[in-house]
Image (cartoon, rainbow, N blue to C red):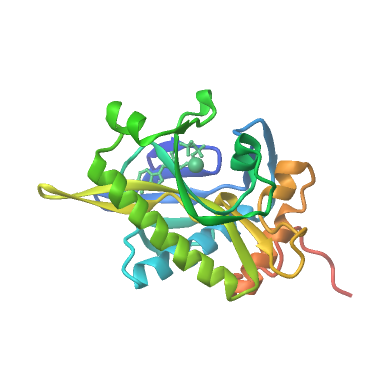
Length: 254
Ligand SMILES: Nc1ncnc2c1ncn2[C@@H]1O[C@H](COP(=O)(O)OP(=O)(O)OP(=O)(O)O)[C@@H](O)[C@H]1O
Ligand SMILES: [Mg+2]
């Protein structure tokens, strides 16, 4: 039996060698982890939904000229992507205060921010992905000043797109995280949105009932109606796979 080459296994995804040089296969697992891997559980069907949702968002971004690593979805759990050189930063855009910024700066959760705020976190699980400044990023060579300017511009375009798509289905995009990578084209590099865009990396609030969190927050807090929340997002966006009507176990219909 043929066996493919596993390149990396993370918390939420596995990367395999792709069919052609410069490509990878990204496999979406059902594992859900929050608070930097301190809590973990398996949410049945999460990988299937995130694969679909990331496809949906990245296709949309590609269509409006925001470059991403996404090539095409292969099956329920896998997509073909371009292999990129990852920049070791998480780029966070915040529209409403929540989580880290609320705690650190004492801004009540839900406060509308005066403008979208772009933050950088150094990707290092052992350090708990600490917030870093542009000074740190340039001094330690994680990215150059030009990269930073491009990353901010890219992140803000993703924010406008994602906010608009979500608003169309009655969901407020409080904040989200993306990861960005470099693609080399001869001597020139291009920055593209990589990794995934899914409810795992967004804070989504229902516009009608702000208490109802449609993202990982219910899980971050304690409960695990995560799969219902993700199914609801996919349903509203019309991207539920036709052969999966719900993310939980099938029930008998009399
Ligand atoms: N196009 C790409 N090319 C190369 N690497 C990628 C690409 N897209 C995503 N990655 C990397 O693949 C990994 C995906 O796995 P996963 O997100 O499960 O990791 P993780 O456990 O969250 O750990 P990490 O903190 O590295 O994200 C990440 O390290 C991500 O940076
Ligand atoms: Mg990750």
